[in-house]
Amino acid sequence: MEALLGSHIALRNQRRLQTAMRCARLPTVKTLDDFDFTFQPSVKRDQLESLHTLQFLERKENVVFLGPPGVGKTHLAISLAVIAAERGRRVYYATLADLITWLEDAQQAGHLTRRLRTLVSPSLMVVDEIGYLPISRTGAQLFFQLMSRRYEHASTVLTSNKSFEEWGEVFGDEVMAAALIDRLVHHCHIVNIRGNSYRMREHRALASRLAPPPAPDSSSAPVRGRSPRRQEG
Image 1 (spheres, rainbow, N blue to C red):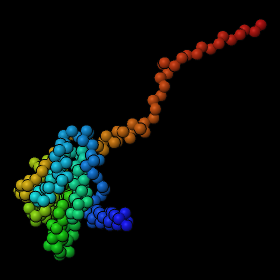
Image 2 (image 1 turned 180 degrees about the vertical axis):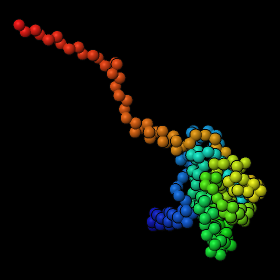
Image 3 (image 1 turned 90 degrees about the vertical axis):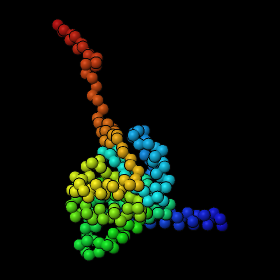
Image 4 (image 1 turned 120 degrees about the vertical axis):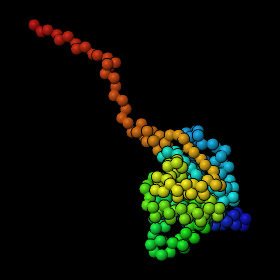
């Protein structure tokens, strides 16, 4: 009976987690155990392990991952979202471009306030790929509204391939970008990743596996002389 009850509870918890992951809209599942710290020595393992205790959620603090493309920013952001969902927290993931599109659609439909309220409620929001695609001034203003509402109310994890000094160009407004950064970093953990791209490493490894074997060196091959022709007579 106890084994049956335990199996039932495990199945229920698994279904609850699957529902939470689906509602979070995570594009994939990543964990801290999957992260290769040896390839990115600039990332401090103890800092990431501390973040994965989720104490920053209790304090309504933010996390910002900065670094060039392919260094693992999205991996680490998603790993925080996964563990938060596993612990029963409401989580939401979106790229900045998709998030702004959703806000612009809500504004045009006349229910922006309701949409903002929906996006403020998750305990953890992941905003991925800040700086990868251009955004409109209206989109930047809508994102600023959302971050202002989440400020000191709930935690946000952001990833960007641009330094804070470049966010004015990203959002098309230096003053608004400065105000946004001020709110984000007031209670914030910044992880600046300086290293090589995982994707480039995988690409080189794949290219190496697919490369044809080298041709034999003809200069080292033995030369067989032609046998002298027997003269008939």
